[in-house]
Length: 140
Image (cartoon, rainbow, N blue to C red; front, side, top):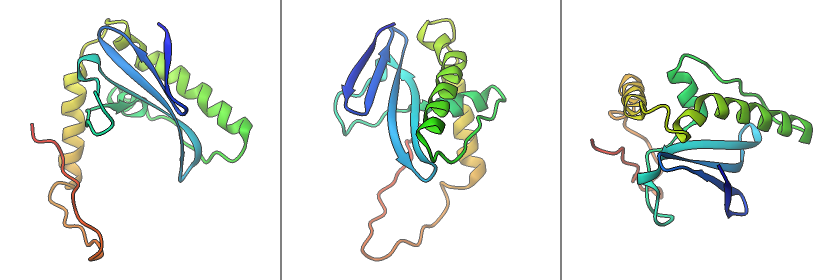
């Protein structure tokens, strides 16, 4: 399957079944790669569209595998992490892209269960007065 460049830091692999976004990120663990999977028919049409996409780590966790995470300090560590994520994506995301797996609804239910178990829906956030609380979880 071909990979398309959508932006400088965002690439996409699209199949008739599922699509995967691969994005370069900078976060609390340093530089990284974020690979997310979502049904192709839920493809966002603009930057404001919200989609229900899951990272390769969430999908691996659904199958009982905890992905390794570590602080990335060097270019060598970044490329090691990228290779690891690529291998995990091949194992856990490629079957969806190829149309040989179709239990994405069960993964959604699994994640919904984790959200419910965490109590985050009922949590009251103490944001400073200059911050508006607009985060809403999708109602299904």
